[in-house]
Length: 411
Ligand SMILES: Nc1ncnc2c1ncn2[C@@H]1O[C@H](COP(=O)(O)OP(=O)(O)OP(=O)(O)O)[C@@H](O)[C@H]1O
Ligand SMILES: [Mg+2]
Image (cartoon, rainbow, N blue to C red; front, side, top):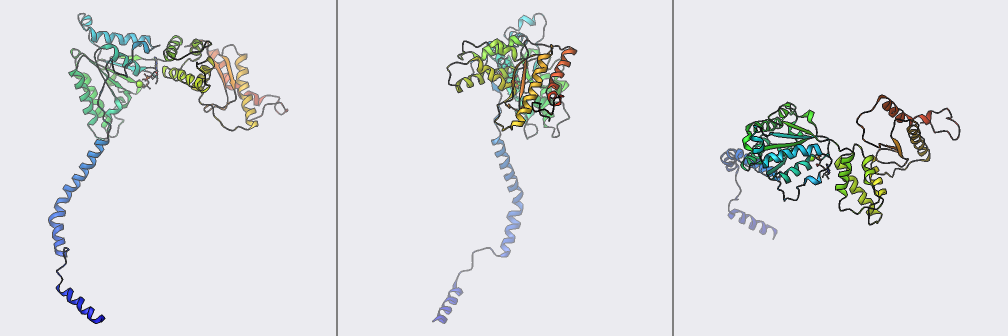
């Protein structure tokens, strides 16, 4: 029986049709005729597909037009503490709204205005206020959006930005964070940033005063910008936006507490006086933190204590929950007491407002010496007294009573 089966099988094999796969010869032909000549084209298609995918994934960086009605626009009244800068910018607004007033006297429009200063002083806000007030088309684009992986794309975007502005003149172009493209040439290995900057220089030369197009830009680091950008004819006017003075801080605090319920005991002037050196952004943050703290205490209004706590939080950082041993606490307490005592004994230093051994931010403890007024100059005696206060923290651990039970621990 098994032998019969074998015979049957072999007979079936004998009549079966030839297999349909390619033999060795036809495989060679397939390689020679089809795969080898077409493979470079296929490769190009694959590369093209990936480039198209990358381009699609890139953010759309069209210049943004800010109109007076748009949500992001800001009025002059919302920007406080920078009166000189406001006056300078108002002139630009006047020029665009009534050019004849200046032109009949032969005056030329400033082509470029560069706002520079520390972060958070209100440069971007000022530009938005100009957008609101000028009535001219205001086109804004961040300089970082000119920086792309592909060479030439940044330069093309600059060309498009200026073309758009010329087409809708009178117009103001605002380039925020100019440092991203404006740094001195020669430092960029790829050359893409230099190419973009060159295009910006060319465009700023390319329009004349009849175009009624003004370029505004904001930067933090004026010293790092390419000198060619800063020469007259490009950014003619460089306006420094400083941190606000005492009156400015008070006005900014008032702006940011508008609409917030304040307690009877709140004296914004006190917070403003102590906050020397804080910028508009810090003060906005402070007002917000105070509101959050009041909410945390389930109160319906913001009390002065919320402002005081928020102030400490802004200048010293978040309270930390580090576990500190008793011995360390003693060291910190003696250290801070040293700072506080020396401050009280010396006539030329700011008054001590608070001493704390609760860790905040990076500090394990702190002594707050807060100024009563803004000072721009310091005498030699004041500087020496300040150094004494700084060294005062180490003094207790080196006192002659070291070794006795009440003595400060040595570190
Ligand atoms: N002069 C000011 N008056 C009122 N609010 C201000 C002022 N300056 C800053 N602020 C507040 O700080 C925030 C940040 O300000 P802005 O973005 O204009 O700072 P900037 O100078 O452009 O900072 P950067 O240099 O980092 O870009 C604003 O949204 C505003 O709430
Ligand atoms: Mg800004």
